[in-house]
Image (cartoon, rainbow, N blue to C red; front, side, top):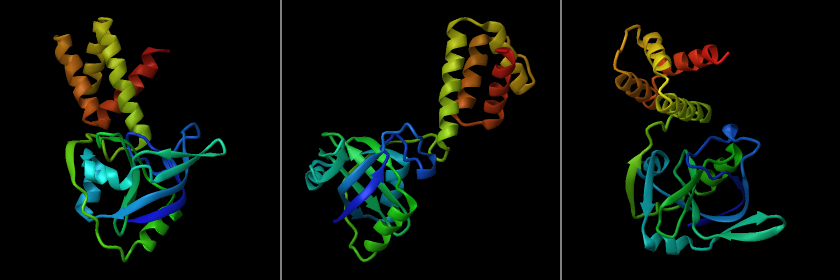
Length: 211
């Protein structure tokens, strides 16, 4: 373990790159946080999955992270940075070891963590993968668009906007679907799976229909 000092972190469900941080995000100015070097597979799991860590690991990091809040220092109960020779990732946990937030780092700060910990021994972190993120490789903008379109499709389906759903289906797949339930489920499945041909068509159709 090696302590890292004076870094900025932006804990969210997904670990966004620093250039995707929004002005309204609650970015934490961290005074000190422990860091651990792990192997490539472990870091890849931590980046791309939802996971839990053991009680024994939580005890190693308990109350060792401090952040500046309104000119006072506040402790984060369970947080740390994991890194390998290429990537660094900050993670915040709850008392049960569940992930409640992840954060990438500013480029220069991440580089400092990696270079200063280059000779550290690998840490064994007991963990269990709960599930993988379906849209792990998407940008923040793409994730938000997928979420918005899912909600929009749910809304028009619940309002029984049958003609709109069938029209969208025809425009997206160049075929008619008389069963509105099947049309809705197919559209939504394509949105969730990240079919951007369909996503962009739906986005364009909404703009036209709502004029």
